[in-house]
Length: 201
Image (tube, rainbow, N blue to C red):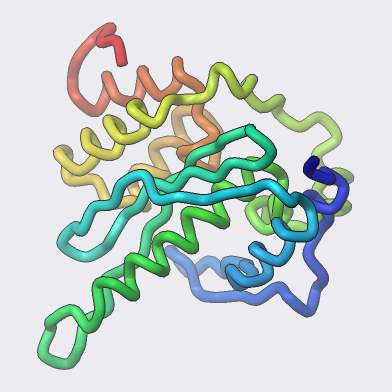
């Protein structure tokens, strides 16, 4: 049985790294091996699988599914395609591995693993600065995998980059990750991007 107090324990400061993000931001992260170690410490019964993947013009996107003790959560992950001096991809396979690691870490955050890395502050500081956090959607109300795929497809057809889609999600819902959307929010965004009204997904 999963030990939630172990899974949700903040990562030690020495394991947290930083890298450049979009718009001059600094993003905090831990290596995927630290996440896998945390999963092994917190549960004897977990699995992760790639449900689907796409190779786009400049990036690869995968949809991963993480199951811990019978509870399953899905998340998208992405990675830029690395190009050589000749402008050709160096190794799409390695890029897909990076996207899979990104998907695993995002799925883990839905279980509370490394969640402090996505909030911009350590867990304790975040709790102090946000005494009344916005309640999360009930798991049964979360956007479906089909909705998430439809949303990403509609965004691509409209020529939206991943950053622009994320900005749209923040502006419309106040949420920072696509995986945090509930079914109603996802349906509204899909309808807006596809120019339809009341379409059921």
